[in-house]
Amino acid sequence: MLAALVLTSAVAEPAANAKDDARFLVRRTISLPLARQMLAAAEAAAVRSNVAVSIVIVDDRGTTILAERMDGAGHLSVDVALAKARTAANLETPTADLNALYKKDGPEIATLGGILPLSGGIALIAGGVPVSDGSAVVGGIGVSGAAPEIDAQIAAAGAAALVAKP
Image (tube, rainbow, N blue to C red; front, side):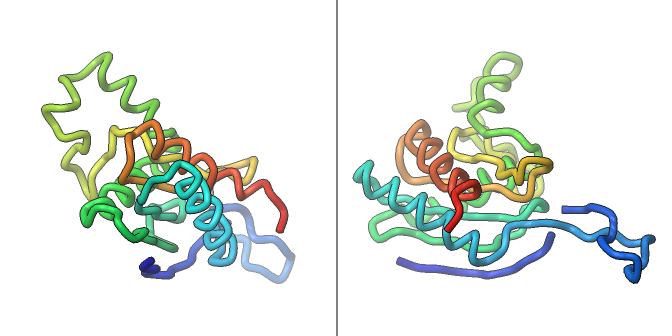
């Protein structure tokens, strides 16, 4: 398995204590330890489903915190998982929901390959899930490499790790 880039940032909220300058905001986001926990939960779900996938976890801005391509996962699956994670985090919506909306009001998704060619790509394929701390979206998780419905289940398992206490 290949682990990749590690970055951190945070979701905007007022500065916490009086000595902080109130003109600036402090952001909350997924920490690296939490990203590792989410990735482990998603990978376990993939193993239970007997599929090899790529898993990408991003902060609320869509910046990669952690990425993994399981042995046997397609070489392009990391790029697709990243597009799914970014889309879910930035639009604060599961990509499966966007797929349904787009199919209803837009051209057939198959004609576009499931990814709109915007900055970094907007994924309209199931497998991207926003991650919330209960009050705001703090990031997203994207999974690619299996059928879209299975990708979505694996991503949901990873996102659920947020509520599980270690």
